[in-house]
Length: 317
Ligand SMILES: [Zn+2]
Image 1 (tube, helix red, strand yellow):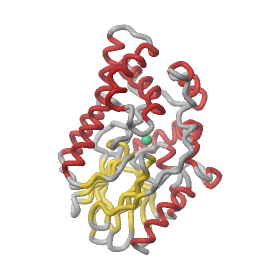
Image 2: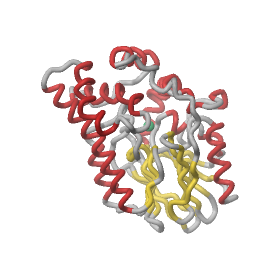
Image 3: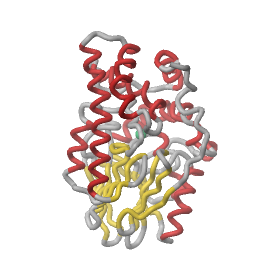
């Protein structure tokens, strides 16, 4: 195997943005595997679901929103704590920044380390990083669920369980039967599992399936329109996380080292998933976390810029 450039530091090609209506007055901002944002327009305002990495990146979202409505952006909802999802929030000038309490906790505990780590891994996603005013602090939090009303339009925010992180939130628009899933669902894009709860993730996907969404704005990859595509993406995500965890569980049971686990994981993952966006970037982080969880470490170990690079040299160098 050739040595690879660290994470996505070599990825400098801008992606094509698509802004498409996935349900009545609900839009998905997608970019070929880069982090997505969704927009829900109601009677008297809008909700932005996931903020992008910087205010400059968020302005690309706002530009698209202004092509479909002039209503104010009232709330920014954070699906989870990762820097590329939250650090652009200030650009929307929303009256509320909403997250689960289990998302606020890691922002307090490891927000700065996560920011430094994510910026180091994927600088292209942090366009005009100087525009970030600081960590994003949720102003409204909830434990299991809350409802936001945009006039008559109801939007349910729910923590259905852990998966991509411990505090993942989805948004459900009952009148349209449309969901914003955050990184709990990815489509032809690798799942980043470096902070995941891999045993619980498939159970949370079961909860999502119960809603039978007509459309979903996933965390990465194209918008999912129609139940067949939604179910395909859920199955794809489930296959990704269960294959990863299964390989780690077997490796730990056999007493393999982390490096041997990486090789064993490649054998089962590469044939199915190597064409997915950010697959090689994610793989060593994913294997590290799967190995930890299978070894009995419940709380994901904090990633730092230093740990990132040591681990990369050990597994991908
Ligand atoms: Zn994430």
